[in-house]
Image 1 (cartoon, rainbow, N blue to C red):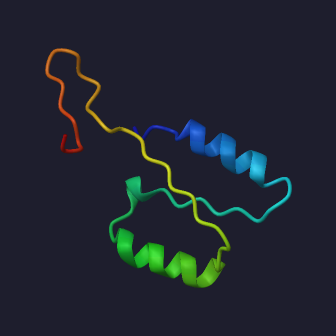
Image 2: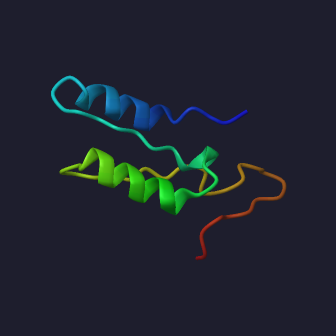
Length: 69
């Protein structure tokens, strides 16, 4: 089950009171690059924010980082 990006959802909800907000979650997309290009072209944002989650596997017995040192 995909995790809900709670931090991103909180920021988006706060901004949506005064701004048009679009959230693009790459987790469930097949062609991320094409969807990003399409979304930016259609939405024409003035600002783009990036949120990163799951930078490791959260396994205490066999930890693995998804980013190089």
